[in-house]
Image (cartoon, rainbow, N blue to C red):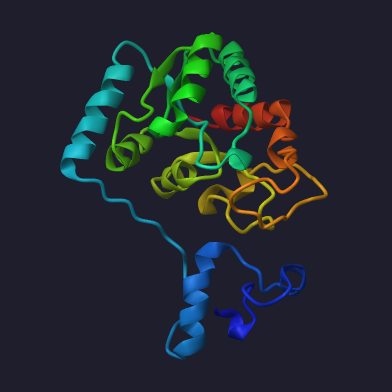
Length: 239
């Protein structure tokens, strides 16, 4: 669909990538519309809008104010879980990353987001990390998460809805991207320059539900030190 009938549903994805036709997913709907309606302006800008309810905004404001009541804190959001195992960075890497940031920024505070399915991952991080962690896994709505993320300047996340939600509300998102699709296709759009991938021979596999090699290399080989370096660089940019 779209791309003048040359979409990835029926054609070689490597050929499409080389020809410049395989673009970030956000362009797909507009590309499709521009091909069926000549009046569509192709010189468009992509913007995202998130409008949580007043109740959600009030809750998030009160929550954030409480965290910064005594002193200014560096709030860092973490989305360590996911629906599919082959899209999840190892939990031990998240622990090393969080403790590495805390060593440089002792006043940093970590807020873990996710669904009830991510409970075990969150519990392991809380048990083994030395950092101060607030656990919101399975405890708030998507709307409340969106409102709260607008107060969180740095978010570190696996590929998933949380990364894109944070990106949409203006957070700087450091995303850990699996080798399922080509680069610059599914990364959080506004922070795609901060997306981190591992260079593995089996990528892209286009296997959306499981790792075809059962090695999970595209996530396991994302280096903790590289993620830490980028996270520290972005934190140092904060006012």
